[in-house]
Image (cartoon, rainbow, N blue to C red; front, side):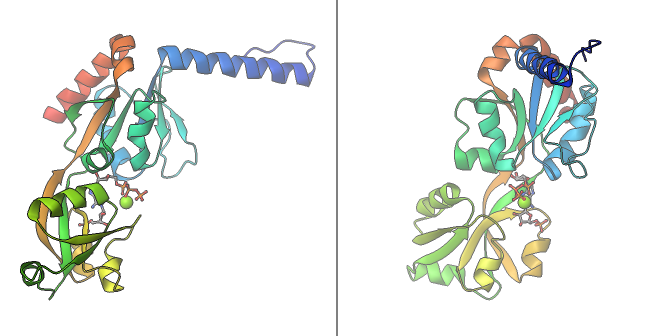
Length: 242
Ligand code: PRT
Ligand code: MG
């Protein structure tokens, strides 16, 4: 921090402002910004970052900060919604990030380099129905099923490939509630332990795709910041392989 004797508070504030602006500019040009979402992605990415010598200074679960410094002056983490990580990386607001394959398939990973399957946040995209609902029978009858999901594109493609007639209902969360509340006949959602389905008397009946989180990289950053990015990516790749 630049502090000069005899400056009025207003002038000191101005100097502080200019200094932060210059530091921000320096970070954008030289530094590495990593986009992560809170929760399982952050938790499961931590050991991979540690392997690359990067340690976030705060935990987003307890801190309200959205920009988290790390032990390296030139590396910072931005905390984003899981579905927003590809957008930050695509536009270069973050150089690298971590996103679930579900998010990448559903929203398209255009303009992103996806060099690594991190094998974390693993789960399966499934079709599930209430226990006792005869899905096979309904399909054979050519019934039009109402399916609630956050993953409209993935669901549309899945049912089209199977020749099943569906009306898709877009939800933003708690898909499991939809059949119970009478909103839908079936859901398309992620399943890991199966505990949530079980607790809501739903059964998974079709497997759509296996999901895990991927490292995503901005294509321009990969060229312009290669010297800094390559060692980080290599260390993460080695950690994943272990
Ligand atoms: O939660 P929020 O609305 O903020 O956003 P989000 O749900 O997109 O983020 P988050 O952190 O929950 O998930 C981030 C990524 O983790 C997803 O994009 C997936 O790639 C991955 N992932 C891995 C999962 C799960 N496992 C998972 N089990 N994402 C969600 N779930 C949910 C699922 O939707 C269901 O409600 O967990 C419930 C089922 O879990 P089990 O263990 O009961 O089967
Ligand atoms: Mg969630």
